Length: 456
Image (cartoon, rainbow, N blue to C red):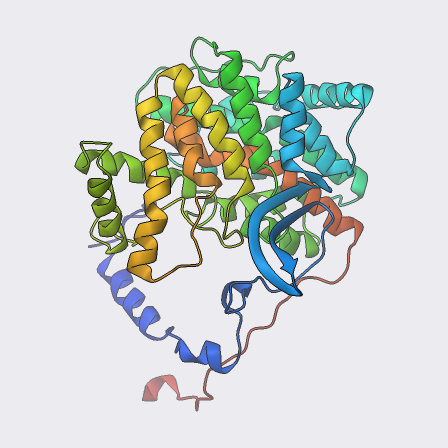
């Protein structure tokens, strides 16, 4: 097959041959990682993360001290010292939206009073605009079937509209971060509408953001053709955004933010790098895999009350005989939490409330059954008895589907929330600017004698 100039999607036999050569010459003996005590994935053998930095933005607790020993406990998540459970409870008590004030908390390290909160909301509204013709010239001109790609491209293009894009002073970076937090709902939803129109031949809707709306309301009103939503829908989405906006400095995309920031680069490049990380199915793309797994399950399990049939399907997943052949029950287990994920516990209650209101009770019950049965199946098949709990991704896919949010926007919604955490961590890295983050890699290559080209 001859390569056609400008074709960026077709592999040739030459590429296939070279790929095999590359792969054959790139294999590293797995035993060498143990021999040289390399922390693969920056994690110890017991799963504990290798300490690579300090942060005052959020705290994750998964163990407690009992008789001088650390033992697993129900997970806890704190934003700037405040338990997320308490933040959500306070917001629910007042029956209000809380995303904006939680962003304020992460960025500035303290809860805003009423005036500070109102001023900050107005600042977000002021910045919730895109440059003139940006939607037409950037988002609509090159639609992508991958919304994370679309957002990253838009973020990098915004660099060109910034008069001080490379200025890494705290004032300038804070302004850039607040602007990005404000426009992420637009970049996400407009990117989806472009894809839906140009690649799926559907009608095109480009609504203006209503300045009186909260971030959650803006997302729903921009997405839906009639702009209508219920208060419950908006409040549940608001809560989901709060739960996804930050999770310690050690998750992959936030660590990426610290690493890239430490090089001294600009805000737009840093956020694009974080987006690239979050896009991965092992990170932000996990909620999509949960939803797709359940859709596949429904094809083979007709009786959703049959525990045995559900367990058999889950066993087939672990045996790589069902779903995507990866052997993973998505939404189960977490790199940090062992007993429970605090975000999942909060989210589950709201998902159940919405399911009852929207007529999805049977579907919620199916999720609940899998949540109960999966740890038993995993324990039996994988001989893991320390406990495997469902994580925040488990119910988030069901939540988004009930909100009639398309699957293509699941991970972008994660990014729309997590941009707040990335911004806080970028600013923290700049305030405490030190050396560029540069971990060590041990070379295992053998020295070779150079051979002239004519003799090879």
